Image 1 (cartoon, rainbow, N blue to C red):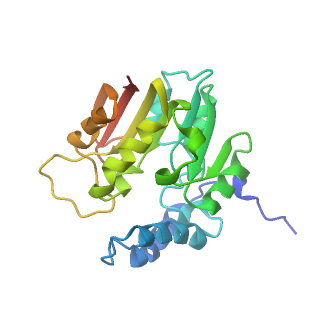
Image 2: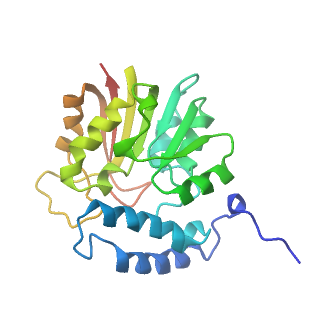
Length: 237
């Protein structure tokens, strides 16, 4: 009898899209925001539920695409990170962290959900993945990193948590360190019904209050992804 494939060998097949759509329906039914629960505890429980219901199938994890985010891959195509200590925020299945490592960085990744961390470790054992909370990160991570990669965490947070999240991201950086933020984009007057809550230009410019200087801000139309995105690059003063 053929042995069961380990998680790190699971690939996207022709049935991937169907399994993802079915899982999405189940997850929407327990989504705390859709149920009117704004409490952070419900949000955390939902992320744990995502991985419990996935049962080792990446198709059932909404962000488990088994490849780095296209806008990260595009940015890294012209960027080396040799010798840099990099931190990948909310690493999920680990593909973005692996892309950073592929460009020469010494990468640390973390996720709120231990099951996600175990999954990422199986797929990329050469990367240091940890179970951690953005809002209660290990104190030794303060000003430790040359580069921080943030994709889709900010847009998953309600507006009242964004100032705290921006301060946490900036706090990981050494002086002169770099932050890359990739998120769905919206106009200032555009109504939203999240999650996710796409970010405005003002949401990104607010990083300046945390001591970060904006280097580039790209407004990327749909194409490589179905939605409009920001790709913002900051440097700590």
